[in-house]
Image (cartoon, rainbow, N blue to C red; front, side, top):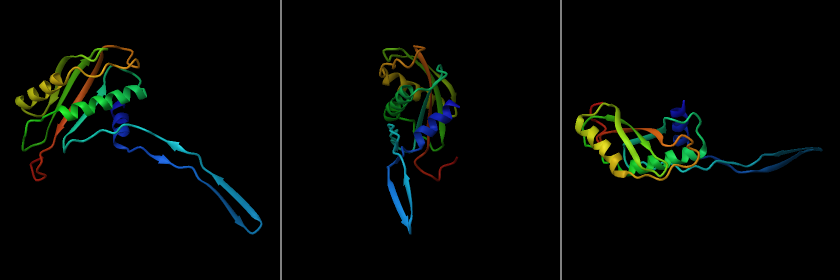
Length: 162
Protein backbone atom coordinates (compact mmCIF):
# COMPACT_ATOMS: atom_id res chain seq x y z
CA UNK A 1 0.00 0.00 0.00
CA UNK A 2 2.72 2.47 0.99
CA UNK A 3 4.70 1.58 -2.14
CA UNK A 4 1.72 2.29 -4.39
CA UNK A 5 1.11 5.63 -2.65
CA UNK A 6 4.77 6.55 -3.05
CA UNK A 7 4.86 5.51 -6.70
CA UNK A 8 1.67 7.42 -7.49
CA UNK A 9 3.00 10.53 -5.82
CA UNK A 10 6.26 10.27 -7.75
CA UNK A 11 4.87 9.36 -11.15
CA UNK A 12 1.84 11.63 -11.31
CA UNK A 13 2.97 15.18 -12.03
CA UNK A 14 1.77 18.01 -9.85
CA UNK A 15 -1.46 19.48 -11.11
CA UNK A 16 -2.62 23.01 -10.77
CA UNK A 17 -6.09 24.20 -11.63
CA UNK A 18 -6.42 27.93 -11.98
CA UNK A 19 -9.58 29.61 -10.73
CA UNK A 20 -12.06 31.09 -13.13
CA UNK A 21 -15.36 32.83 -13.00
CA UNK A 22 -17.87 32.95 -15.81
CA UNK A 23 -21.22 34.58 -16.16
CA UNK A 24 -23.45 33.55 -19.06
CA UNK A 25 -26.51 35.49 -20.05
CA UNK A 26 -29.15 33.84 -22.17
CA UNK A 27 -32.14 36.04 -22.73
CA UNK A 28 -33.32 37.10 -19.29
CA UNK A 29 -31.83 34.12 -17.43
CA UNK A 30 -28.40 34.64 -15.89
CA UNK A 31 -26.25 31.79 -14.56
CA UNK A 32 -22.96 32.09 -12.74
CA UNK A 33 -20.27 29.43 -12.25
CA UNK A 34 -17.24 29.81 -10.02
CA UNK A 35 -14.44 27.34 -9.45
CA UNK A 36 -11.80 27.39 -6.75
CA UNK A 37 -8.04 27.18 -7.09
CA UNK A 38 -6.36 23.93 -6.11
CA UNK A 39 -2.63 23.42 -6.19
CA UNK A 40 -0.25 20.61 -5.32
CA UNK A 41 3.47 21.08 -4.97
CA UNK A 42 6.02 18.30 -4.81
CA UNK A 43 9.65 17.89 -5.63
CA UNK A 44 9.85 15.48 -8.51
CA UNK A 45 12.53 12.85 -8.83
CA UNK A 46 15.28 13.38 -11.35
CA UNK A 47 15.91 10.35 -13.58
CA UNK A 48 19.58 10.17 -14.55
CA UNK A 49 19.12 7.59 -17.28
CA UNK A 50 17.07 4.55 -18.01
CA UNK A 51 17.70 3.15 -14.51
CA UNK A 52 15.30 3.60 -11.58
CA UNK A 53 15.71 3.88 -7.83
CA UNK A 54 12.71 3.64 -5.49
CA UNK A 55 12.86 4.31 -1.73
CA UNK A 56 10.28 3.61 0.95
CA UNK A 57 10.36 3.60 4.75
CA UNK A 58 9.72 0.26 6.43
CA UNK A 59 9.10 1.22 10.03
CA UNK A 60 6.40 3.91 9.77
CA UNK A 61 2.70 3.07 9.72
CA UNK A 62 1.66 6.47 8.34
CA UNK A 63 3.30 8.50 5.62
CA UNK A 64 3.37 12.26 6.25
CA UNK A 65 4.36 14.91 3.67
CA UNK A 66 7.69 15.48 5.46
CA UNK A 67 8.45 11.76 5.31
CA UNK A 68 7.48 11.68 1.65
CA UNK A 69 9.77 14.62 0.90
CA UNK A 70 12.62 12.96 2.80
CA UNK A 71 12.15 9.77 0.74
CA UNK A 72 12.13 11.77 -2.51
CA UNK A 73 15.32 13.59 -1.50
CA UNK A 74 16.93 10.30 -0.47
CA UNK A 75 15.82 8.71 -3.74
CA UNK A 76 17.31 11.58 -5.76
CA UNK A 77 20.61 11.31 -3.88
CA UNK A 78 20.79 7.55 -4.44
CA UNK A 79 19.82 7.94 -8.11
CA UNK A 80 22.57 10.50 -8.65
CA UNK A 81 25.20 8.43 -6.81
CA UNK A 82 24.45 4.92 -8.01
CA UNK A 83 26.85 3.70 -10.67
CA UNK A 84 25.36 0.39 -11.80
CA UNK A 85 27.42 -2.43 -13.18
CA UNK A 86 26.96 -2.53 -16.95
CA UNK A 87 25.05 -5.55 -18.20
CA UNK A 88 23.25 -6.74 -21.31
CA UNK A 89 20.31 -7.88 -19.19
CA UNK A 90 17.96 -6.13 -16.80
CA UNK A 91 18.59 -6.69 -13.13
CA UNK A 92 17.43 -5.42 -9.79
CA UNK A 93 18.95 -5.18 -6.35
CA UNK A 94 16.80 -4.47 -3.28
CA UNK A 95 18.74 -3.10 -0.33
CA UNK A 96 17.55 -2.45 3.22
CA UNK A 97 19.32 -0.05 5.55
CA UNK A 98 18.84 2.01 8.68
CA UNK A 99 19.25 5.79 8.94
CA UNK A 100 19.89 7.30 12.36
CA UNK A 101 18.44 10.63 13.47
CA UNK A 102 21.61 12.56 12.39
CA UNK A 103 21.58 10.81 8.98
CA UNK A 104 24.17 8.06 9.37
CA UNK A 105 23.48 4.93 7.34
CA UNK A 106 23.98 1.59 9.10
CA UNK A 107 23.13 -2.09 8.59
CA UNK A 108 23.17 -2.01 4.78
CA UNK A 109 22.22 -5.44 3.45
CA UNK A 110 20.70 -7.05 0.37
CA UNK A 111 17.05 -8.10 0.55
CA UNK A 112 16.76 -9.61 -2.93
CA UNK A 113 18.57 -9.46 -6.23
CA UNK A 114 18.37 -10.69 -9.80
CA UNK A 115 21.86 -9.43 -10.66
CA UNK A 116 25.16 -11.16 -10.11
CA UNK A 117 27.39 -10.86 -7.05
CA UNK A 118 29.42 -7.98 -8.52
CA UNK A 119 26.23 -5.98 -9.23
CA UNK A 120 25.03 -6.60 -5.66
CA UNK A 121 28.36 -5.54 -4.13
CA UNK A 122 28.53 -2.42 -6.26
CA UNK A 123 25.00 -1.38 -5.27
CA UNK A 124 25.60 -1.96 -1.55
CA UNK A 125 28.90 -0.06 -1.79
CA UNK A 126 27.09 2.85 -3.50
CA UNK A 127 24.69 3.19 -0.57
CA UNK A 128 27.53 3.02 1.96
CA UNK A 129 29.64 5.59 0.10
CA UNK A 130 26.76 8.09 -0.16
CA UNK A 131 26.29 8.10 3.62
CA UNK A 132 25.74 10.25 5.63
CA UNK A 133 22.35 11.38 4.39
CA UNK A 134 20.28 14.33 5.56
CA UNK A 135 19.10 14.12 9.18
CA UNK A 136 15.75 12.46 9.72
CA UNK A 137 12.87 14.91 10.10
CA UNK A 138 10.94 14.90 13.38
CA UNK A 139 8.03 13.15 11.60
CA UNK A 140 10.04 9.93 11.78
CA UNK A 141 9.01 9.07 15.32
CA UNK A 142 10.77 5.71 15.29
CA UNK A 143 14.41 6.75 14.97
CA UNK A 144 16.53 5.18 13.67
CA UNK A 145 14.29 4.53 10.64
CA UNK A 146 14.52 1.54 8.34
CA UNK A 147 14.30 1.95 4.57
CA UNK A 148 14.13 -0.29 1.55
CA UNK A 149 15.58 0.82 -1.75
CA UNK A 150 15.03 -0.96 -5.05
CA UNK A 151 17.67 -0.34 -7.70
CA UNK A 152 16.50 -1.29 -11.20
CA UNK A 153 19.02 -1.49 -14.03
CA UNK A 154 17.90 -1.35 -17.64
CA UNK A 155 20.42 -1.91 -20.43
CA UNK A 156 20.99 1.00 -22.78
CA UNK A 157 20.15 -1.13 -25.80
CA UNK A 158 16.37 -1.73 -26.04
CA UNK A 159 17.03 -4.90 -28.06
CA UNK A 160 18.76 -6.55 -25.11
CA UNK A 161 17.27 -9.70 -23.67
CA UNK A 162 14.58 -9.19 -21.09
